[in-house]
Image (tube, rainbow, N blue to C red; front, top):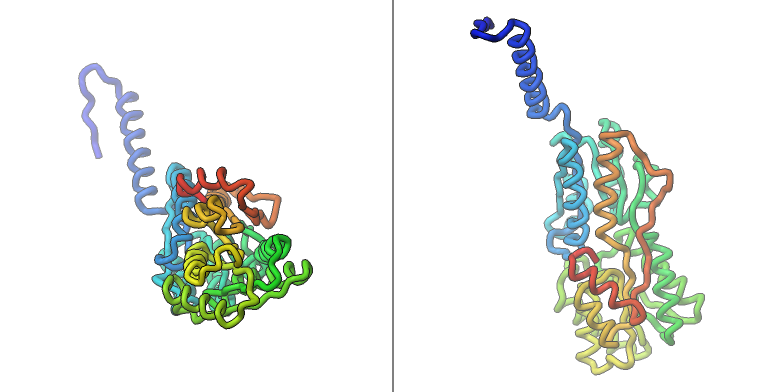
Length: 334
């Protein structure tokens, strides 16, 4: 390419201007090709499950930092929980095929997820664990784990309800076989037993997950069949709504304690009104924010946290501190 010198301009000035043009064009082409970007995929549970809205807020806030540094975030969800393990494995494979350099994901179903994550690792993809999978993270060299210790959270819940006078606690599992849920109820059982209470674990078909009416009827049937149950603990906020309805229909709001993992506006309203004993907060906003931002920071800058795992819970929310939690819920982060 030739450039004619304009009057009043030296050849040196023209050369510098042209070189700057070439450098800018080359940089733009490089960024457009994606070669300079660090692409992250965040994989979570069902789009029908409101819990993931709080996680997504954390992911969205972290995405601002990622995009400011030339990266991208792809948020992927299963449609439901009916075929959960295989669906998660498919999303992992999809993320790898789409060129993700890092995947942040809970590991609920190790039989399905672990082989897919190992294949991703072998393809050079870095893995970050959050929400579930603390005990599996070494199997695919996950960088870290951000979440609650599910067993300790369960122990805390069982001890709390027993300490408030419960003698027989129903622990409801809405998706049997999910490692984090099974671990929670095991913790509830151990904590309550140590405190002198009994625990009955109710596993319902996974197609009742997110089914308020069906879950409420299942809980009500158990309470009718066994009047000695004087406490119920659910493993999701929506399920606590179903249990609250069942307990109210039986006219036993003053007789049966209600607790749950995770929070919502309705859960906190019941705690404020004295119709629910407590909730166990795992801070899902922090899980999404930290898993996304720390995975990207490792890819982009090579940074790591010395603390492994990083626990975001458990924290008991009851009448003593519910006001603070309500403010966080109003902002969509708790």
